[in-house]
Length: 143
Image (tube, rainbow, N blue to C red; front, side, top):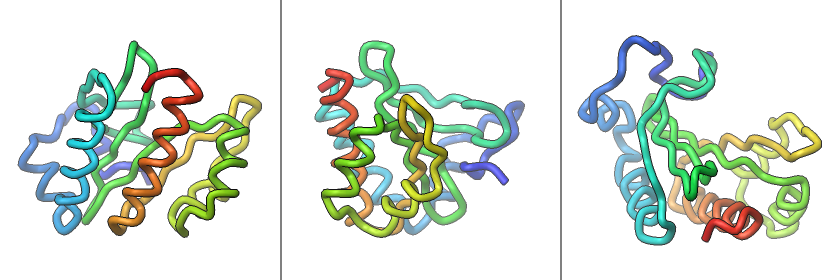
């Protein structure tokens, strides 16, 4: 099973297909993408990332470094934020919501940090993801 809904590299989804898939959480998707565009000097593209296990995602980069990626799912979306080991500790200390805590618990720890995949269910999840993205931006001096 892939992170995102669209896992066929040969079949790029249309904007209408993406919006239909996200469905009831489309306002959260739009709000987060608008925030990223307004807050960071992002370059964005919709790409097939990392193979079938991940699928198509809207990727945001700053000065060629990944800031975050958003993967459409059936009825929502997942946000990828790559964190340093220090940022994982900071995130846990901040008392962020259950979705972030689950993402941290499920992520494989590597010496350089963890790839967090946060399933967005609510406006609180979006606020938590913004905090994670801000930490990444500070850590990488992207903001």
